[in-house]
Length: 285
Image 1: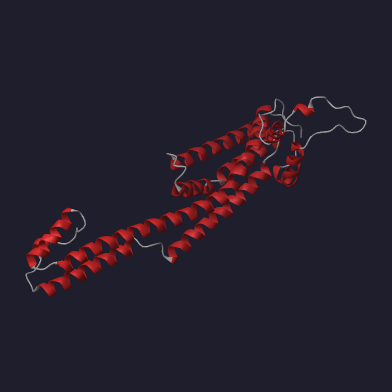
Image 2: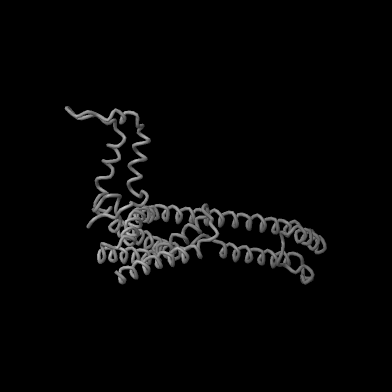
């Protein structure tokens, strides 16, 4: 019995370690930020083996010592909570895909916007250079652009006193070079980066699916000895049956109250059986 209690303590400790390790990374919550979603799912999935091992140890402790009532209570309660963990990891799969696709779209939109802004600024500077009629007019136009925060990198005071056509050519070349460098820096994701992110995302999605199956194998509904994974194929039929009107069998008197239950109420009763409050008495094994 002492060994079973120690296993249960280790199992609970693993759950606490997992909770704090995940919260330390995902806080503060930014539910609408796709980058936060990707980071949170990755952290929760990469550390998913910690609570899974804890749940397995708790099952082992309950099996070794079936007469230990506290251990049986913990095993029963956490086996039902494992249903929620299984569903949560399963939901990570589409959420991860959505977050990655959305992050791609936002990155491309930001890149397109920044490149458009760079083109507008460069066109404004080029227009000012081309329209200048003299050296002094050119410096005046460039100073106005600098004051309006359109021109930033050019040192106007060090412009060489060379013939105006040659000076314009040099300045236009500098503008074109600066525009090209900026656009290259803020360009869309290259093929290598997209491939790396996609592969990492697929790895996380496969891991999430595997953890969902693993938790479902260790989960149990109330008053059920069958793992939740084995009951999954029959759950849709049960849910549909719970929404249909109940009729008394021939020769069997009805309770007289079933017709008072709305489909919503019967649906709630069905989902309550997935993860209800802990039983007062453990299941006999």
